[in-house]
Length: 197
Image 1: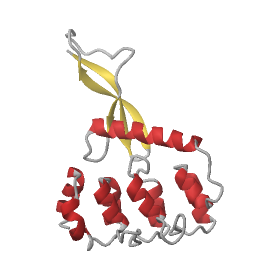
Image 2: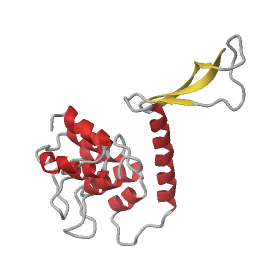
Image 3: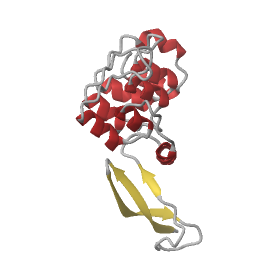
């Protein structure tokens, strides 16, 4: 009744295959899974494995779509890389001296972190471009035209993974109380409770 099938284990950047027991009806002994075996994704975090797998599919779709879209002619190299979801391009722009707090479209526009806080963790997984911007010195307290910080924006938009990265990176949590009653995302509410915000 138990079969073995290949399982993908994700550990940071490393992915390896190993055997995992799986219940297979009609079988009285363990046997290797045949063709068409389903690959199980196990994430290191507490995130549900199905949710993690769906999240990765969404991330890949966004990346392919972004790579195929044309670059706007007036974009700086940093913003062009951000729009293409290109971590290497962002890193190259930062190394070349790009301003990681450059506002898109002028003084009232978003900084890269504010834009990411709106766009979310499917487009911008926290360990990639957002972490690179934070490491490069992005202003965690920059405000949008409504006076909200990236942390407030990410919580209101329901992007708990971005919010958690910002909290762990030292973003001020003082403004969270003013938006707490407007939160609709259960995971964001959990983070607010977890960090006593």
